[in-house]
Structures are given as structure tokens and as C-alpha cells.
Length: 113
Image (tube, rainbow, N blue to C red; front, side, top):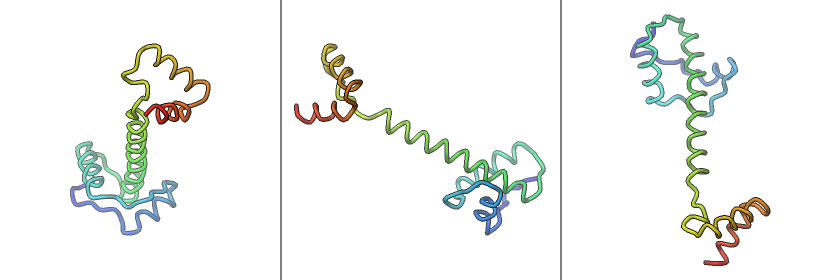
């Protein structure tokens, strides 16, 4: 059983890489607390190394999900040069974007500013 004071080994990052899960940064206290809270509630029993493997996989998944959220937010919330423009101008910007790419639209905006 996992308990609230559980800690991965000091060489956890090295072991995780050996098990096939390369982590670029050590586990944070917040990540560890979330992991322990989740798995204590589940009531599963595993050996120490199995908990470490589970932690490594969980960290890789959660961090990957977080990076995707950040990338999505950055790409989704870029200001649209056509925002606030007439329908005709929006269509024009769309055609320019499809034909010449986003850089051409940005250049048009820079020229008109």
C-alpha cells in the first residue's frame, strides 16, 4: 500500500530512464502529493519499484498533457488580424492566408499600422 510519507528513491530519474520513461526534471512536491493522494484513495497494493514505475509513467503523461495545454493556449489565443474587420476583409485575409501563409497576413497588418 502507498502511504502519505512515501518517497521515490534518490536515483529515481535514473531508474525511470532505465525503465523506459525519460523525465527531464525531478518530481516536484506538488506532483508527488497529487500522485500519493490519488493512489492512496485507490487502495492498491504494489511493491516500491512498481510504485516508482507508476509514478514515472504518471509524470510523463501529466507533463505531456500540460505541455499540450500550453501549446494549445498559445496557438489558440493569438490575435487574429481579421478580428473586428468587415466580412469582405475577413474573406480577403483568409484568401491571403490560404494562398501565401500567415506571414503574408502579418506583413499586411504591419504595413497598414
